[in-house]
Every structure is written in C-alpha cells, then in structure tokens.
Image (tube, rainbow, N blue to C red; front, side):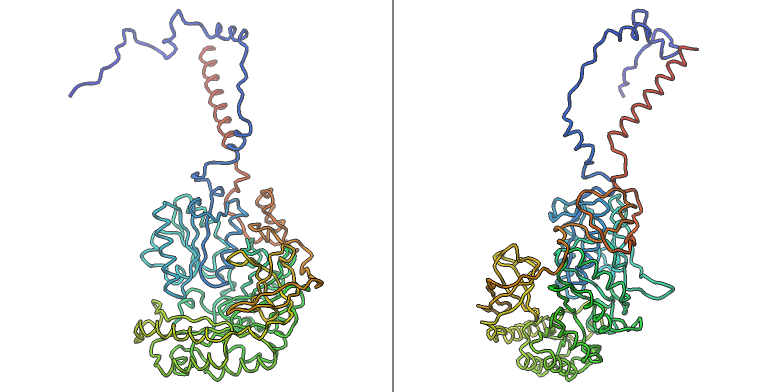
Length: 581
C-alpha cells in the first residue's frame, strides 16, 4: 500500500508561536499599524437581514415555527376538536396552512363510523409518508384501535387529550413518536374531555360548535365510535353557558350543540338536556340562533313536552335530528337500539303537532346483518309516510371489533341495491315546493360551494340561497321564496326589510384565534400580531405550554454574535497570558 506523504520538519518547535519567523511582524507592530487603517463600512440588505433573523428555516427542529396542515373527517364533534387543536397550535406560534404540500407536519383527525372514512384516513397517512411529512394522528380511529399496523411508529393524540396537542406536535417535530390516549378524570370520575375554554380557530367564524358531552349510554352492535368516545360524560351547565357567551362576544351568530347523543346529556351529573337549553336561550342575542344536534329516541321521550317548548323558542331552530336506522323492530333489536319503531313515531308525531313546520332529519342503515326484504320494505314505507326533508342513507359497513361484524352479512350487491332503492324513494318527492311565495326570515352564515350564492337558514333550518350581498353575511334578513330544489330554496331579499345584527362584536377574521385569555397571553409572552383575541371574563388559562414560545427564544443572529465574541475574548486572553509570561 502506498503511504501518504508526510511533512518533514528540520527544526523541532517548542511551541506554536515558534512558527512566526524573524521576518514576520510582531504583535506590537501589527497593533500600531492598525491606527492607520480606515475601516470600510460593508452595506447589507437590512430588510432581508431582519427577515432572516425573524424566520428560521422551515426545516428547523425548533418547535413553534413550522407550518401545519389539519384535515378532519366525520361529525361536528370531530370538527370542533379540530378547531381546538388548530387554535392551540396557532397560539403557540405554529402556522396553520391550507396547503398540504407546503406543510411540515400533517395533523390527521379521523372518523371511524364507516369504512370509506377510514380508507381516506389511511391513504392520507401513506401520502404523508411518501412526501416525508411529519405526522400526528387524532380522532376516533387511533383511539379505538391504536395497535393497527399502519399506525405503528406514528404519534397519536387521543380524543380526550386534545389540550396537549402542542406537546405531541413538538415532540413529533423533534423526531419522537408520542402516544397520549388516556381519559380525563376527576377523583376517579370520567370528565367530558378537554376544557371548553381552550383557544380555537373556527372553520366558520360565524358558527360555534359546542360539544355538550362525549360518549353515550348505548351499546349499538354496529358502532365503532363507542370504542373511541366511551361512556357518557357531560360538561357542567355553567361551563357550556360561559362558552356560548364568549362565542357571542366574538361575533358568532349561530351555535351548534353536538355530541354522540345530545338527548342523554346530564344523566351522569344529575341534570338533563332541557335544563341546559333553558339556560342557553337566556344568553342568545336577538338575531342569533341555536341548533340542537342528534338525539336518540329513548332519551328524548322523557322530555317531549319541554323539548317542544324549547323548539318553539324564536332563537332556537325548529329542527331535530333523530336517527331511526331501520323501521323493522327485529333489526332494531339486533342493533340494540333500545327503542321500537312505535317510539320513534311517537316522538316525531308529537313534535310535528306541537312545533308546526318542524324539520325532522333521520338516518337509515341499509343492509344491516339479518335484514330481510320485508324488513327493508318497512323502512321504505316509513320514508314514504313521513317524507323526511333531510335523510342520511348509509350502506352498512362492518366495523372491526363490533358485534355486528361477526353476524351473518347481507350480500354486498343486495346492500348496494337497497341503498339505491331507498335513495330513489327519497328523491321522488319535493319537500319545499309548497313554500314558494312565502316570506321568511333567514340567517346568512356561509357561501355556497359554487360561490354563486350566500347560504342562509330559515326558522326550520331549511337551506335558503340568497344573493351575495356582503352586508348580509352574519345577519338575519327577510326574503321572498321564489324557487325550490330538493335540498334548498332560493330567496329574494325584501327591499324594505329590517336587517338584524345578532352580535355587538365584529366577527373574528378567518383563521383568527379565539379564546386567548390574558393569563394565557401572559404565559406565552407578547402575542404575535392580530392572531389573538380576548376571551371569557373569568381569565382562566385554557392550556399550559410546556416549552419556551418561539418569540421568547433568542434570535439566531444574536446567538452567533455572542458565540463569536466569547471565542475572540478567549483567544485574546490566552495571547496576553503568553506575552506576560
């Protein structure tokens, strides 16, 4: 093997300073020569320099500076969780982006109700991995089945742990895998979940989604959500009322109450749904509305009289979502739904009588295991009889780990055909034709998918499309109905109609963080620009960050200058010690 050439030294050097020859200038000479040197000022792009100082590279491992893309599937409860997680991350300093490819981390908030939703979730994980994105998983899929193969090695945050999303994201950015799947408890009693006063970013600044409880009291044989959300756990009435008050102070004009079963609210804490609703209607300003979420028949039966009174309140939509799932008592028994078809009809008939014009929405599962042609025909007759204006038709999907998945399945082609047949029945009638010519008050809250109209809802939560007049957004306006479709009506604003402004506060801007208390802001330090908004008067901090916020970290340039200065000082000190010796 050829040896590397080596440097030869004719003279043995006692010290590094011996390298300096007699011809070299001495330190003192160099020092005096500097007096005759005029320093040249080097110009630099100050704006670019400051921008570099303030903006570390996006691939930096310093938490709190990355871009995060959040995708949510499923129900309004899941959407509320997604809004809370976005709010906390934005309050901490992360940038929430709508551009998935531009994001450093994907937060995927899943739904476990049906196979297609989980398939989309799984495909998104695969795509994120292909694009080398950091990944945090949330929602009901990893909570219900955390040991699935495609979830291995990935960070997971449980449905009751969303108040710790900053910690999970922070550790994931650093390259760690974190799993928080525990339950919130107080003295051994299960709580409703994360605090309601956390920061959040509303998908629609005009609509506040409030989860009044989590979990349910049922044990439906087809339901996978029960594995994730667990048994019933309700939030106290005062916390829910405080959240509603704060929302109205932030310009919200519509509140949605949501949970896995709103009708069961309060049974675990010694109260009930009507008691909550009467407290809430006291704080709803004129021109704002409250929408009640899904309730199963068994729990609404006990409160029919009170519920009818509440649904007649001028600031509560005359709308109720009551899933029937099947009109066959045999199928309902196999589903363990804990009611019969007669119970469902009793609820609907009573509310239709006591709340004229009420909208009843319902769900139906086609092809549940054991469903015969006769069972299905009973369901068809129910739809033909009641002509539900809002009907959610779902083909049955066996969810892993549920009792229904082990039952004898209806052939796939039969399930598909029954789903088509029921859809055909649903589309055979027009629920809004008789309303053409009516004058209605509607609350405008969003833009239509085709961006041609604004979307409003009337007293019965029926969709009314109105012209895109920016002064209407977030307002209650009067319109004349001139056209109808299967799922909507069109209204022309009355020229001399009064426009109601439901809140004294201007709505937050899209993407603006709601619910940042003074205490929370003081804990984080000075807020970053316009992304912070004052919250409830109680001043409680909704979350406790675990690491130093990015605006408290020293600038990289300052750190480099400090390091260089210390190094220079050390060298000079060593030099003078040598000279003195």
